Length: 137
Image (cartoon, rainbow, N blue to C red; front, side):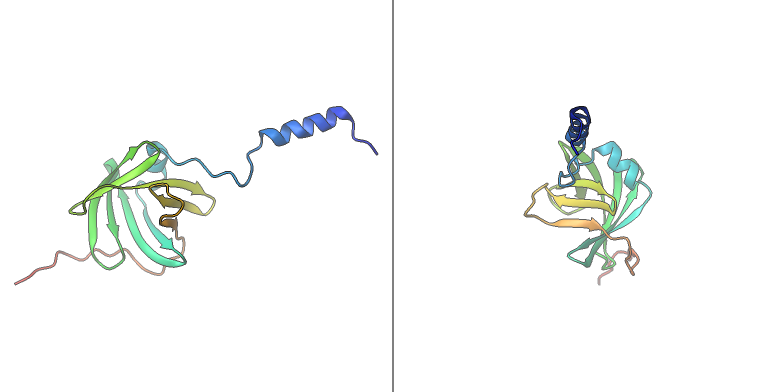
């Protein structure tokens, strides 16, 4: 049985306008990132292990922890297609590209495929705890 030429053309046109599954998602801009994160505490994983957590506050403020009880306050901003973070006493900005997947956020350090790749971990058996300042003698 031969497929009528008109039906074949419609089928091929439909395929041409669909995004390919292998195409990477576009990095999130500031507005989309803020909508997704504000008011949440997200836990991030790296290679199947807990990496850290970040609490997203109003006015682009954040609190980061490597889940060791020490927390760093900071801010974030958009620079080109990256979301950059500056933390108290932590040196230069750390910039990441964020994409939203069905499983949550993915973050790639400075949008470098060879660099650190974090993902939103949905099931973490730890809390983000910030201990008070260390007091010395």
